[in-house]
Length: 303
Image 1 (cartoon, rainbow, N blue to C red):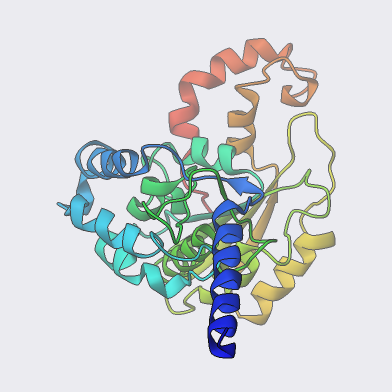
Image 2: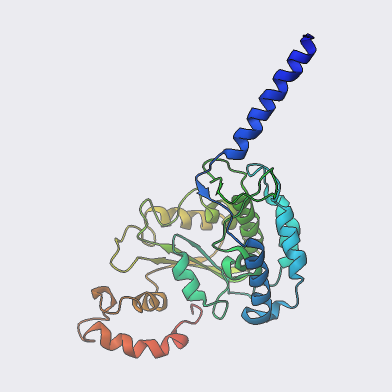
């Protein structure tokens, strides 16, 4: 047999094996959420029509097309933040001044605090974040272009579709935030309330605009019944304060900021930490009084 034919046959076999391995590779992350297109489109219409109509009319079909073009049919380890630029531009809208909330390790509490943009607007309450929050997605080089069995984690490959999306979304959100910025951190987190590296440390704080930000309020919230690992001026919070000071941002720090603490106590009204003091009496008595006033109490921090 012609040596060239032998070499060609060997190369074809190697390519076939590599393609087969790529097709069956299992990642450690969840696969693409079923019915992804229907969910994303539905959330887009829900947000623009009922959640936050102030953003104006958006072409949700065009937005979906921009989203899928960023990763569908592509190697799930070769997706970059810039691939989502069109999607970000199509979903962009104003973030009201003094309504931005940044966070680490307390997502559920932050979103209860924001109440679907009625009080504040964290990244997950912007149109871009709202459409894909809590979803999973990645592409595949084979038909139909989506991988449903598993998707790569950041530990497996940094340039994966979800990591790339949240990086550009975080940078954009930080650049468009203004007025008083709030940062809510979990003071009971093992390893520290302000993790480094993190989205907050690496992509958000570096993109705060000094001429647009008037003040930064740090809220260090311990979990009800959880350990008090971090506090204002200590451990990782001291690191955060040093970073903000080096960037000439004025800031104040609050341990277990009272309005948010009351919100935490809604789910644990009888816990000793939810007592206002010995003179107040059992927690269930004062929490029943506080609940009707939460809408009033949960106003922006007044300095």
